[in-house]
Length: 132
Image (cartoon, rainbow, N blue to C red; front, side):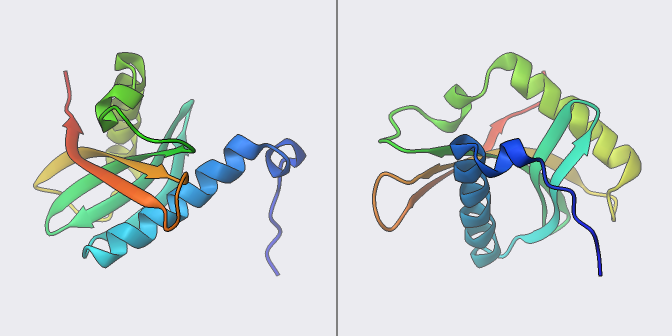
């Protein structure tokens, strides 16, 4: 039996719970669109990639944002320039250590999962940003 380490602070943190639910919703959405999930919550240094997927021969890095309220901005407005740079840097680390194939290209998507209504609303912004 495998031992799993759980941080007690994360169990009671409503933001972490909402984020986890959002990532599961986003994953199911992507699977339904034909994406192959390669990695969930890849962590390296101070960076984390929520979902790393393959679509055809492209590597797609997906940042998931979970919200409880109507979404009035697009996906990129939810990420600061600093957050974008951190995602790009972490993607380079992923490519150097963990990628299971040689992708033709890398794309950065943002998925907003809005829990303010039922069923949840998912907004997928493909190629939301690129390397600067």
